[in-house]
Length: 402
Ligand SMILES: [Zn+2]
Image (cartoon, rainbow, N blue to C red; front, side):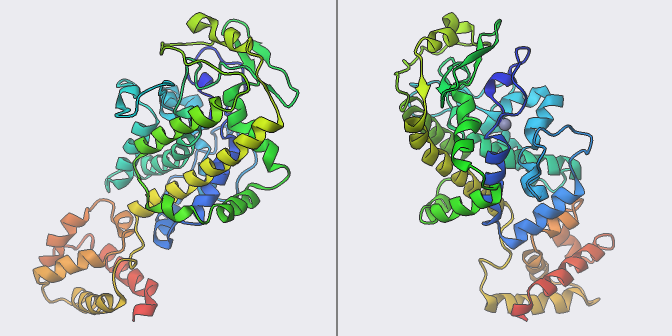
């Protein structure tokens, strides 16, 4: 999660890609991996293999997470450095004090916001005609943005660029000015929620250990997150409320709600950073102890929701069908489709149902809607091999149904 401050250009002095940091995004991805169904995982692997990250792209996170899915989770922050127009896709400035309701008004028409970016990239993943490289990028964006959306300061602002303009002392490190012109400081509220609080509780543990611990810690809550809303706008509002309660609400010195105003640096809004500096926010154990469980929950929730969105996109093929009806359908499909006799319409329809979802990737040029009539009329000379391949693979993958 990049600090929002960095997104708006021209002012930066802070090194790139402070995010949930590398660790936070990796944890979210590693939690997700535990809950992604095998069919979705096969498709994900295929997509990332077909559109790998440009090896020439400079990566902020030098230590990899160990697999392409988790490594993908920080790619969008690196990509932004060469594609700055994607900057606004990482957050949504819902002003403190906003009334509940439609939050679309906080998503600029021109360059978007994180909820729109997630919807747009999911649409690319659903479209069978999306080229392989674009599809892989879309998946990497979804992995990253669902993480970003769960950093409460990525869905909240107080004319302070999501807390970037709130200088704080953190465990004895006083805020120092890093850019006089833009009046920016480190540490600041956004940065400690991105990285410092997490680093404090993480200690020496690896991201995999942290993911394992968090997955176990929240095991009782996970089912309700899996069955809850899959609407990123609902998640954004929830994060906004978390920010009010846990980010600003736990500060020792109260930060007043600012009347919403456009800001382009921490010098704006009557020198907001200087005014916040005068509050002398001094944060240590008490704030850490209040914030750490919130961050742990947000990271885990992001991982579970990421997995749930991907499972929704690519359901486990046999999950919602009884083994009995599958056995019947399979024998009808396999015996008829692999013989030269014409296929009746219901068998063609049946064939569609039998195709595993990842066959959409195998035959990207043909939507399943188009395969149905072709199957029926035996016009599948080009795609026949793919369809056969799918049928064969399905047969292999479902031995328990044989
Ligand atoms: Zn980001």
